[in-house]
Image (cartoon, rainbow, N blue to C red; front, side, top):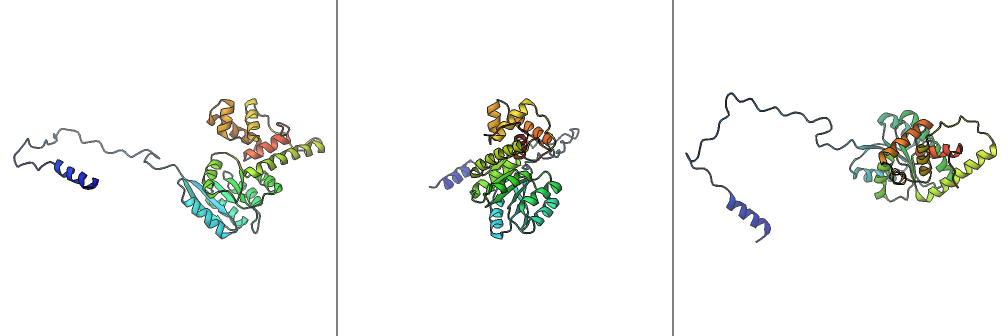
Length: 274
């Protein structure tokens, strides 16, 4: 006998028999003086079992096949919502202003305007958007210019697709992402920038606002490529405290990404990168 038939048979044997007419006390009737039962109250906003708002993602790439692959990956992930696709840089800027995405996945080499120029323009129309360059270019100049344009991440297209969703969530959560093979090039570029500024003499730009001692500690660890969780462990503080420090650093320096903060810190000789 199968488990299903056994369960059904036992359930049948336990089913109570119908009450005989006249047997047992009559059902209790509610008192006419009893107050009516309270009306059901509506659930508070956001407390109806609904999930948090999804992360809104915009894709910009001139290759339709690659856009389709990203679309398939994103649509299969809970908490992510694809809100637009663009096939060139100009269209990407226009869509960003219309849909105001949380995260933008964008190629560098695109028609009309490049992804780097599009990133600059997006900061005007959608300043809250986190921009991740997703490209085949491993050139140091592209990486450096992308950061200067306000990109929060730089990933090569050989990234495993199953890691892409986590990358989107990480950038949305305030982290900066660099493909491991590019991280060393970025630090080399920072060091080159520092030497060039030293050779050119006194900087002609306005000095960076003064950071607190704790903010400097956080910035140095950001420059080492550490994420918020690792920084929290290193400094024996909470991850939320780290996020607050990073937010304050970005606001004081009037920039959009952690990597830009490192650039300014190197330029101002606030930190040293060997």
